[in-house]
Amino acid sequence: MSYPNEYRYTEEHEWVKVEGKEARIGITDHAQHELGDIVFVELPAVGVEVKRGENLGTVESVKAVGDVYAPVSGKVTAVNEELEGAPETINRSPHQDGWIAVIEMNDPTEVDSLLTAPDYEKYVAEG
Image (cartoon, rainbow, N blue to C red; front, top):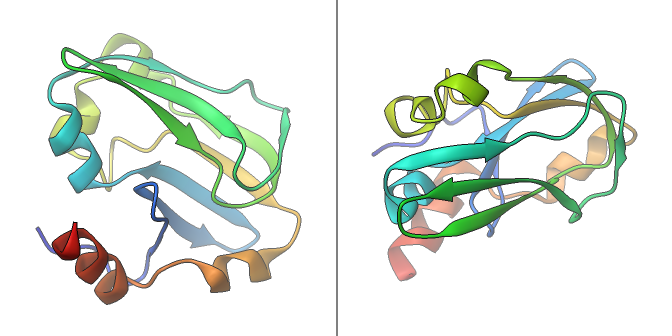
């Protein structure tokens, strides 16, 4: 799997797509592959303020439950409600249709400290 170059990544396997002052958040292809078939997603509430590193939600699979952490600080402005009825969307399209939430960033420079796609690919390869 090649990871989108315009995204940034965390060592906890979240991705961030910056869209102006907003950051669209999801879990990486590596994370969904490790979890297996996803059966439930707990989404954050719209309007909630989150700090970088705080729990944003959970993803439950047939094998495990994984926490999703906020890669940036800010206010949740949107959630992917389609995941409530079709959590397997994350397995099928983790970097596109399987996004989890959108955060209006308090400090867009937080993204600068996240991994680039080549750095994330190297991180995953070193396992």
